[in-house]
Length: 347
Figure (cartoon, rainbow, N blue to C red):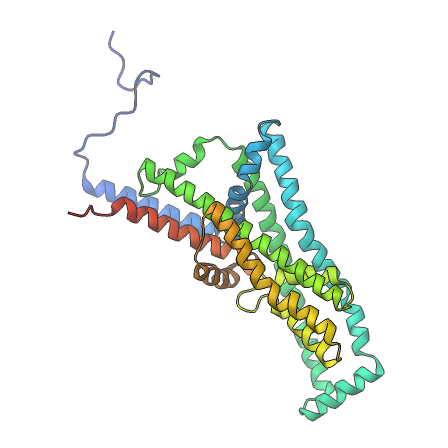
C-alpha cells in the first residue's frame, strides 16, 4: 500500500523543494528573515548588556561547570557556578559602592569645618565664584544626578539578573543548541568548531587576564598605602582594582593623588612606598599576568582591549570595560575564521 504524500514517517527525511522555485520567492524569504532579525535586535537592544554578559560568563564558567557536572547534577552544578559568580563579582561591587556612599557624610562634614570652610571660601573668592552660585549649581545638578544614578542602578540590576539567568540556561541547555546557532553563520561545520574554540579561548584569556591583573594590582597599591600609613588601605585597594579597568589613566587616579599628598606633607618614606607599589609594580604585574594567561589561552592585541573598552563604556557603562574588548575580539575572531575559509589557494 502506497503511503500518502502528506504522511509523516520516522523513516523518511525531509525532501527539499524543487530547484525550480522562483528566485523572487527566495529573495522574499531572505528579506523576511532580515526584517525579523532587525526587529528582534531592536526589541532586545535595551537588554544587550545582560545578554552579552551571559555569553561572556558562560564562556568563562564552562570549564568549571564541566568539572562540577562530573560529581553533581547539571542544574545543581549550574547553581553552584551562579553562587560563585555572585560571590566573586557582584558582592565586591556592592560592598565597594556601599563603603563609598557611607563615607559621603564624613567627607561633607570635613569640608564644612570652620578651617576648611574659610579656605574654600577664600579660594572661591580668588577665582571669582561666590558660594551662593556654587550652592545654586549643586542644587540644580543634584536631582538630575540622583535620577541618573537611580536609573543606572535599576538597569544594572535588570541586566545582571538577565546575565545570571542566561548563564544558568546556557550551562544547562542541550549540547546541540550551539550547533543550531552556528548554522546561521556563513561558515562550514569545521569553521563553526574553529570559531567556537577561538571564542572560548579569547573570552577566557581576556576576562581572566583583565580581572586577575586588576585584583593583583589593586592589592599591590593597597599594600603600598598600608606602608605609607594611609587609613583604610583595603578600601583603597578595592577602588584601585576597579580603577584599573578604566582606559588610559587606570589606577593612577588612585595612587597619583595619594603620592602628591604624601610629598606635600613631606612624608617621603610613604611617598616612596606609594611610588614603588603604585607607580612601578602595577605595570610589571600587568605584563606578567597577561603573559601567563596568554601563554595558556592565547593572546589579544592591546589595541583591541583599549578600543573595545572605550567603545564599551560609551555603550554599556562600567560593564563595557570588560564586555567591549571581549565583543570586539569575538568580531575579529569571526572575521579571521571567515577569511581562512574563503582564502583563495595560491597558484
